[in-house]
Image (cartoon, rainbow, N blue to C red; front, side, top):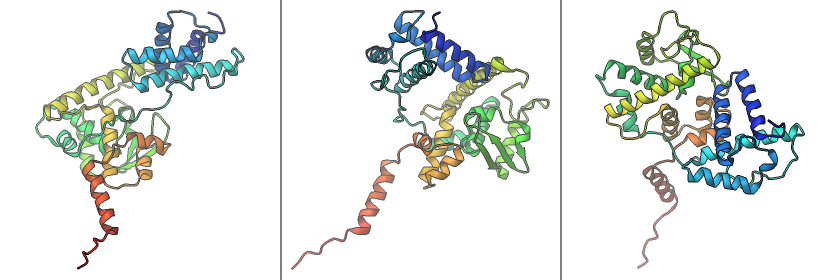
Length: 310
């Protein structure tokens, strides 16, 4: 491959990501590369081949194939990053605003939060099958642990719980989180922890602790796929019609707090976000009833009907 080549640059960066253990990000770049190669119909893609017109055509091609806007954005941002690295290395001349015409933002219209009655059904339906009970326990605990992401939940270690407090660093951002464990939540934790091998370093029974590198990443991905499958089964059993995934728990936690008038700054800190903008993406809009009530109360606090004269 030529040095001034998108494919070579992307593969080199993917290799670097794998070396530092960022396997999920590496997969994202590999997905973008495969997609762009398919669009171009070329095994070697010179940087000079990338221009505004071709990027717009690629965006239209992705949309026609049914890609969501956020997927389009991810692929474009991956290509842009490799292009910028090549510019920094002096391998290609800089073209101002090359990616300005394509979507590189975040589409946040689709909210994943569940209504309160669905949450109560998922967390409180009694007498479910033993395997389903395990999934229900996970749902309850992840919700109670400030809407914990599954990647953090699966990687919790036994030493993360001490004196009734859960302390850990988020896998994604490195943010330090501390959560007090109430007595009723401690009972749920103990019920789920019984399923974990006593020799395992992990608190819950998702990972073996015996794999490293890409094998460990593959083991985690397998656990995530099974958990999402089990969540779908739990939703069906509990009569919940909305889509339920591991992300649903986190979004539902955030939106429940919003409905309780908790300040967004506190919600952001509880979620371990480094930016309030990220938190805003998680939050579902208030219901029409809630907005109408606030609007009506505001109006009535100011408006006084004018008495008819005469």
